[in-house]
Image 1 (cartoon, one colour):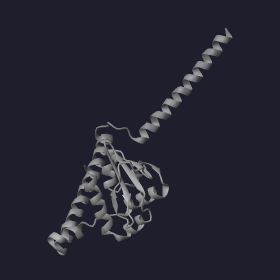
Image 2 (cartoon, rainbow, N blue to C red; image 1 turned 90 degrees about the vertical axis):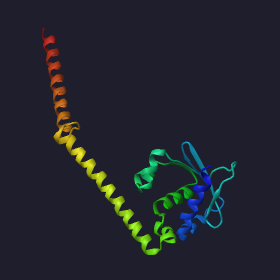
Image 3 (cartoon, rainbow, N blue to C red; image 1 turned 180 degrees about the vertical axis):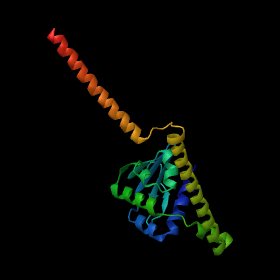
Image 4 (cartoon, rainbow, N blue to C red; image 1 turned 120 degrees about the vertical axis):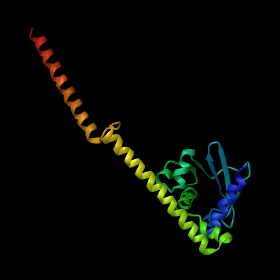
Amino acid sequence: MLSQPTIATLNHLLAQSGWALQRLAKFSGRTARFRIVPFSLACTIQTDGSLREAATDASADAELVIAPSLLPRLALNDEAALEQIAATGDAALIEEIFFLVRNLRWDAAEDLSRVTGDIAAERIVNFAKGAQQQVRDAALNLSQAAAEYWTEERPLIAKPAHLADFARQVDKLRDEVDGLEQRVQQLLKAK
């Protein structure tokens, strides 16, 4: 159901940067399966590097299982999210897929320029990037302010220094209890 639009979108991204098609062409005939519960998408790489939907009975040369919670992080280019993708199969193909995820970018201005013209497209894209950065900055500032409030104003979260001090006090108390227990044992033996 979603496979045709997804593959069309991926082919569009690959075509926007010709280098990606050339890199994938080396893997012609191989199939990669992407599982994002509850969806599964299998793509076979064609001789020109573009993708087509794999036959239903095709076995996957590489399989990547992606938790749905990773999708927003992947969209924001979070490198740590890539490490949480479970990948099995052809190591070279998996490495190439990860390379494309890291380096393939949508040229929104190019697509938008067909509708609005080059100058307007560039301005719209720059405005959108600025708005996106403002949202990121606001989220970062809010999280830092909340952390400071919960550690300083209304201590709901313990500071690392306080946790370390508490651990030292617990260790000291344990050592003193052990020492006291040994003294009691010695006194009982002395009787």
